[in-house]
Image 1 (cartoon, helix red, strand yellow):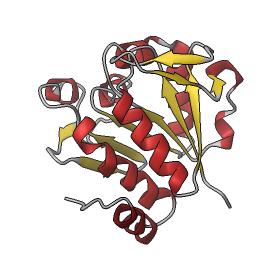
Image 2 (cartoon, one colour):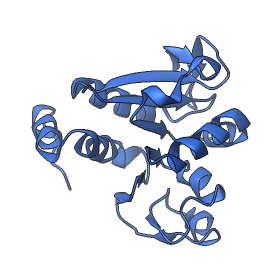
Image 3 (cartoon, one colour):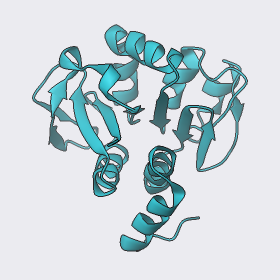
Length: 187
């Protein structure tokens, strides 16, 4: 059965984090959908790069996906967290045993939701207090998988993050083969 992912875009998203994930998941054959949280046809990132969306949040059927992904960036992370419809659906998705993933500042969203309590997670350096205050354990790793939650640190870890998602949804061999094909040496 084909795997699928939804990546959420809000104004001010970090372009490298979002687009690296979209690109690599699609290369791996994972159906990956770019979702605007405000139903816009396009969303502009924190470095003024505008990306065309596949769909909007209100039209999204969460049951069609194996994982939902939140890229970081500012104010993108704050905009994602301010979207009550998104937060409600991420919680339900997670509570039904599905994978959720966040990179850079976005793991703070999961921490604020109480989803990281007692779990190892990573976040953008300098934001560790966002994890500690909500009971998470900062792993200091580039990528951390704890149960059905995958977190990562930022732009420099975007490839590692995407490869971990691929390994989780498909298998490690596929992720390693893709890494070799893009001339990436995993750290």
